[in-house]
Length: 160
Length: 160
DNA sequence: GCCCAGCTTGACGTTTACGTAAACGTTGAC
DNA sequence: GTCAACGTTTACGTAAACGTCAAGCTGGGC
Image (cartoon, rainbow over all chains, first blue to last red; front, side):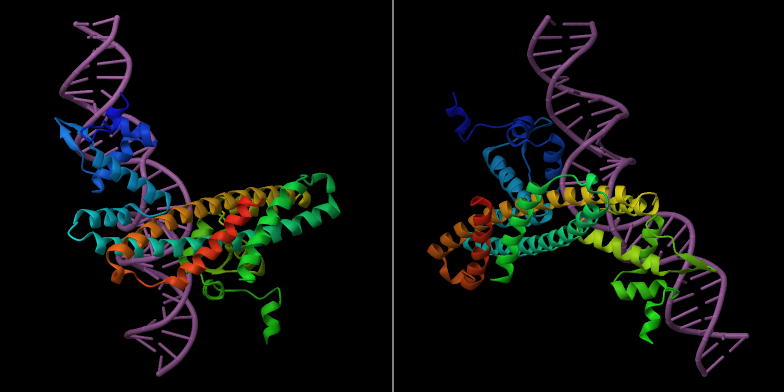
């Protein structure tokens, strides 16, 4: 029954979780090495509980937002030393905001790079158009999309 | 005179260029190792010409837009094997466009991460507000800025 | 002559997140 | 009985872009 999948006593093999979350066994073992996971053992084999599964979800979510494994571990540790949930939530919140700020910085960097790239492209296109128009990969539509997006961002950045 | 700085026969020491472009000597030597630069020698010491300076500028620009050193080298090589300028321009243009596409993908990834982060932040804030409002770092203004930007991007992404 | 500052080469260290063997044990299918 | 398919541990390899010594040469100032 599917219901079994939700029963808390259900456990998972390493491959179960790998399949479910598109990870590799090597990755899960690596996370364990780094102290992010600590599944039970059945003999030598790893046995993952629902709690482990949740932790893995948190790990992968952390990765998606660009946290390093050590940062993720810090956050997980916070939830573990769980004497007072509120304090840890506050710290997590702080961490998340820091990450958000960093990500915005990254995005601004990327926008800057895109502007520079587009200028370079424009120059190249112009010169090619003069000299060897036949070599111009026709990508007018592509460029329109590209510029539309950039303009949007430029507006947001400049016009506040 | 400042005019001397522009005279083509003016040469530069490694430190000159490092200071001008905020790089380290190690970096310039590294680029040389990788075949991106090949300054003249005066005894043992490196002597950079104007051409070398331009190449360095191109290298740094390439880095800013996220090209790897090997990709940059390919482009520089194109300009060197200079039998037909137009063909290389066309290839550079292609490379640049590929990079632009990749950067946009990266930016979308970042936006996705930011959305996930903001959701997490919102949940944390809400629960903290219920349980321990005193722990809430007051960052209302910060969040407004943050959301304004995100909304802007969301609009651009959704509204075509 | 001495010393320091700055240049040189060479080589190993760093970081992150695993990949990739190697070598072995366990279980189930046939 | 043996082969395949999983699991295990240990350990080295990878990629990028330099940082960080180490050890030595050289020119200039005093």
